[in-house]
Image 1: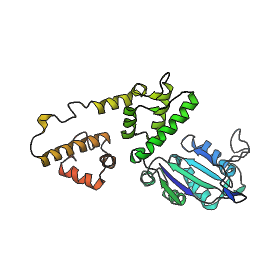
Image 2 (image 1 turned 120 degrees about the vertical axis):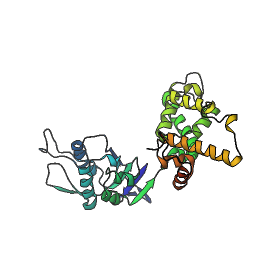
Image 3 (image 1 turned 180 degrees about the horizontal axis):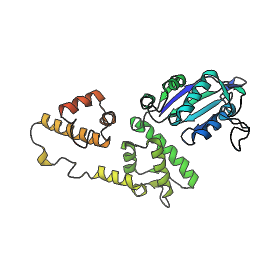
Image 4 (image 1 turned 30 degrees about the horizontal axis):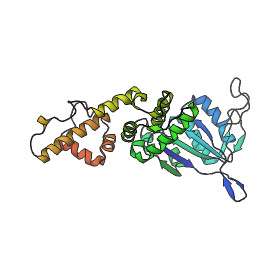
Length: 295
């Protein structure tokens, strides 16, 4: 996940402490353009049928923080309007000629690389550079596995308390699987997995294999009992050691490319090597033209 923040905010102070006013948030992908426009910037009587005088989120967040989630899903016209608001620090409600001064810190989040979103015309470049005073990139869960134990404990405590379950933890074999799994759905997938398992616990106190969702059971079985088609057999070991290393390297690269659906960057991340190294090996093993791996 990527975050950008445009800083310009007021702080409420008390004694020697400083507090940021509680944030107001909005999901930019959840509403149609007309409703999102009114929600952000407010409406006035007569702007459309049934419209009332209502402050938008920018007015409500005056002196505080506004979180805009999935800003790359915001409509292009609204992105242009947002850019002007951030630059001028003024808004106009729909149907009103009155200009209102605002003082708001904006935090924007998105679920893709900002530069890719710009290249695909899902994010205005000028808006990105206006928002990007501070940019924080949160790596996917597979790249920060040290966080998985902490998250497992947190989600177990949270969901077991909500459901009134006396849950102590995760069985060792399942725990190791959680630590090594790639979690394509990231933290949300891990949380939903823990929540789903907790819902299935009755007299037990540990999450076991039986509590896992079907897709994770299948994946765990595949890892525990690799098929003969994917595991090298005794008859595969021909030639000297360098030849066998190259043979295994090619198999791993092919599998990583299939898992990544031909995406070289994702495959290189899975293999733990730089993209440039993977491109070199693709040429070395003539994998550029292998059907079903790369388009």
